[in-house]
Length: 464
Ligand code: C2O
Ligand code: CU
Image (cartoon, rainbow, N blue to C red; front, side, top):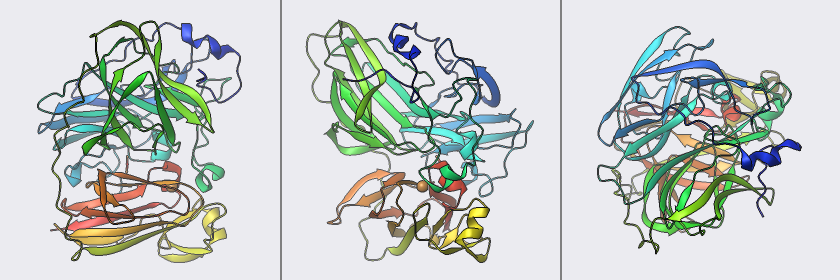
C-alpha cells in the first residue's frame, strides 16, 4: 500500500490531498528570455502559506526549454535575483563557453544583468537546466527546469511527460524555505534533505490517463541530495534511456529504480491499470511506499497493449574500445562525518581536518579540497580516459562530469550505458571510461550540492 503523504513531518491535514483540484497548468513557453526571480508560489497544499521561491519565470520547475535535435538553444538569461547566478545545461555535450559554470567557464551574472546562452543541442533526450552558482542554495530555492531535445522522428507514444522530482526544506508554519543552506550537518553528512517532496512543483501531482495508453515518462531527480527509489504500479514497460542517452536494448523497468541527484531515466510505460483504478509512480523511503505521482485511469486508448517499442535512435557514441592506450586516472573520495580524512590541501596549503571544518570544508578528491588551480586531469582531444572512482566515505555520492558522457565498466569489464552522473554508494569503487572529445574546462563534482560546496568539486581539461 502506498501512502499519499508527501510530507515527511507528521500532519493530519494532508490525507485530503487526493480530493484537491488539479493545480493550474504551468506555463510552457519557448521565450527567448529566461528570467530568474523570486516569486511567491503555492508550493505547499492550500491551507499552507505561499512559499517565496527563486525560479526561472518565478516557477519551480521553470519553463520547459525544448528544441529539436540539431537546433540551437538560445536563451537570454536575465538575472533578477538578489545574488549572482548562471545557468548550466546539465547533460548536454555542448560548447564549453556556454556550460554555465561560474568561476570556470564564465563569471556569474550579477543581479540586474544578463547573459546570452547559445548552444547546440547535439543529443536528443532528457536533460535539465539549473543554476551553477552557489547551487547548494540556488537549486534548493527552485532554480531548475526541464530541458528536452526531441528526436527528429518522434517515438510512438501517446504522451510525453516530464516529471521533475524534488524535495524542499520548508518551515511548515511559515511556508518558507529554510535558509540554513550551509548547515554543517548537511555539508558533512548526506547533504541537504528536504521535508516536503514535490513532482513538478506539486505535492500531489496527478495526470489522468487511459487504459493501454503508452506514456513516455522523463524522470529527473532535481533534489539537492535525496536519492529517489521509484517503482511502478498499474504501469508496465521499458527503460529506454539513462541520463539522456538511449540504451542499446530496452530493459524492463526494474522493480526498484534509484536515481541519484542529477540523474534521469526515460521510461516507456503502458497503463495496465483498469478504468476507474489509479496507476502510480511510487517512491520507496526506508521500506515504506509513498505516492510520487498518480495516474487515474478513465476510458481506454485501445483494446490491447501495443507491441514493444522500437529503440530510441542512438546519440553520437564515441569509440572507447581501445582501452590499452587510455589515460589512467584515479579519483579517491574522502572525508565527511565518520570518515578518516585527517588533513587535506585547500587553497594550496595542507590543513588539518579541524581547520577545514571551521571553514565549512569536509571532503576531498585525492586529498585536495574544492577547486584547484590545475585540473584533476589534462587530456588531449580525442584521448580515451579510464578512471577508477573510489568512494572511501560512508555516504553515497553522485559524481557528475560535464561536457562528456562516460560508461561504467562492470566487474568483468563490460561497458555499461552512457551516463553523465555516477551514483556511488559508501565504500564502492567503480571504473568509468570516457572519450575526451569535447575541448574545454569541464566541471566534475558531486551533485549532492552541499558536498560540492564543501570540497567535492574539481575539473578536467581537454586541450586541443
Ligand atoms: Cu547538474 Cu555541475 O551540474
Ligand atoms: Cu557527495
